[in-house]
Amino acid sequence: MKNKGLAINSFCAWDDETLVLNILGQPSAKQDAIGKVKGKQLKISVTAAPVAGRATDHMVRFLAKEFAVTAKDIEVVFGRFNVNKQLRIKSPKNLPSVINKHLSQGVIGCRKETK
Image (cartoon, rainbow, N blue to C red; front, side):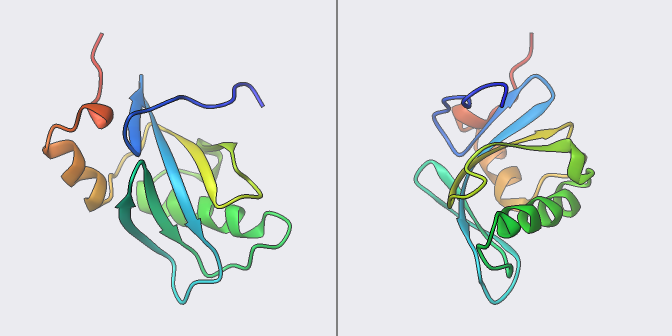
């Protein structure tokens, strides 16, 4: 692991072209879904059981489709075997509605920083 994560004031933040997300995972759910913001985390439900990191692997594949990137473009910074995770998504081509809504409200923690 390169780093221990980026401290952010919201559930999401931009680090150059990489979107950093704090996730609250829910394994063994009825369906794969991006849920609501819970404090400084975005709830993500997946159908996979939490066995040997399989739920996290399934979440990465699910989110890759949602963000229109490959699974290799998503790095699990921490939390592979835990419900609390931080993910880095390199150059997402699509932003799910909960993130778009958050960005359009101008929430400081999720605005893309320009240099």
